[in-house]
Length: 420
Image (cartoon, one colour):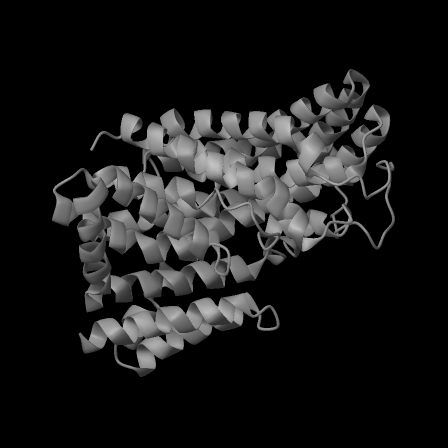
């Protein structure tokens, strides 16, 4: 019990530190790793093993390759086409915007997608006569929803898949999330389209074509001189995803090879390849150590036992709901990836204790990690926070009902796709 109490204490410390905005996320993540090593919960090799994980390397490569997509104008061209949707009127534009963003964010990290489409969203809002505050939050939310139906849609799916592989379980398949994730994402789009006009404030002015510099996040110039190489960059990106997915080439090797090909073919400047958000890499590597500590110390089994007692009251479906709710709650102070990795061992232990299909709980946790919309702490939401003139409570007004309805939908879709 001493080891369990120690790990749970470190988890609590991590949650508190993640909640304090003055401390950078990557500092908190590394603090957790150091505490696990200093207290002897993990050996130094175990504590830092996450940074050499194949999935962490692939995520770095994925972020670097998206720089190539931006530099060759792939995202810019899609965004320019989006601006023309403003002629369809307010609802037509908002629906077209969200659907296009959902498609892109299934393959491109949601933060990159939001940043790339933000200028075009402002131009389209102006054409449709919409205030930017009623466009930019739906843009950010759609980029998060897009990651639910495809393995590569969000790094959370990848790290959960990697952890399953480490535990000797089958990793998440390329389209395994689609039966539940895609309907959930489309439902989310419909909910936003219905609620946004009444839940979002009309505080900000009508979208302008360029916006003020202080309002927009730093967006790399996507209409770069290398725009003639757009199809080449897109072909390399898609090839990496396909080769890695079918197992012809290990994910890490495919990703690094893709980055090198983009550099060698001139799609990506070598200096820009490393201009990624390294916080994501540090955070995921650190949280893998925490997930290992939960498993090694027995903390996951302990919490899973508590979840099994809950099942005695309401059955396995109530346990599934509790696990998904816990994931959403933890993803507010922590990252989505961190929350999923903390709850994952709890779900696996609960499934073992109940004698139910562990896949049901695992997929519920992975999908619930993409359903936290109640605060602007998600990076995609932070990108639109300033330009949309939002306040903290604005996200709760739209994100609260959206989160609740998404969890209710997943409670039906997940057991249907992965029967208990």
